[in-house]
Image (cartoon, rainbow, N blue to C red; front, side):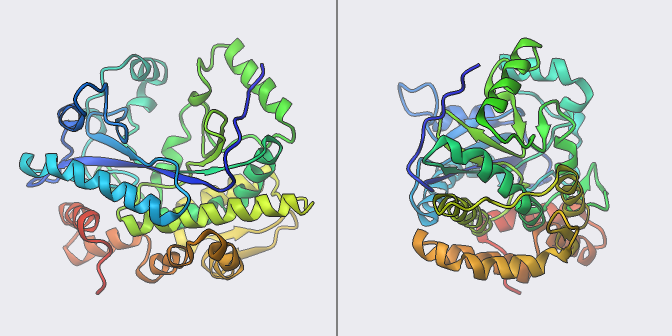
Length: 379
């Protein structure tokens, strides 16, 4: 099977941000997505160009256009947020983004009435119905097909860093799971989700996809739901590692880090460098460690088994990428990663709120709603 990759201008960037809808008073999920999507739909259009439906009726997704800078990404997302708030505020509905809702039950949620979602649930059954999860995806443009797989493999070295920074799903069904990102391990239960295979040649990817079609595993390339995947029709690499992020600052920081990594790898390939990779078993172990321990994870750095605290490695990574960020005009947004580390990723903030409020997960939900509107608290 031939898979055509439509090259993009190098390091253009876009983002997709999944948002949960909750009742303002109770904090419970509210299945009002259809009403919101109809309200924001422009006259004569089938749907809003940047505000989309998702699997569950308690969820919407806002997406950006193709941007050159992270500042453009943030402005684009913020504009869509304002549009949605104009509809949700009179309804008594709030938005939040985290890997999971702290206490709403998955079995009470309604699935969007669409054929592809019905097919997914029919096939995946219990696991599919449990996908009460939210994420952030970042697309970065790649200017040549032969760069895609080497960049994807090199990005896997930093998947635990991105997972730790974005981890925001410590709770599931009103219980503390003990994990920083329960979403990461939930999502990989779906067929074709989880870590990507590390193909060395584009033809190997084409053969894999052909096998998936032949054996009926997928009907469309988009049904390959890897943590990092090529998006051939867009000419991008799509980073899907991250839990839902509660604030625009965090989305910008993660997008900047992703854009800088991809651009750095792209430049190194242009310079004739062979990009470093990790054995698949180390990649798998790093994912589990970041999901379990978040910013306390000790990650494996190379095939020799050297290890390091992920936050120490992030600090050096930010310094190394600063010249790249200057080239991409995202120095401030990249340094916002330090703000995440200073205040703690969302899983830490959520647990701190619960502790301060005698275990109240309703207080946790209120804090996520407040962060969506006002950003990370400064105190």
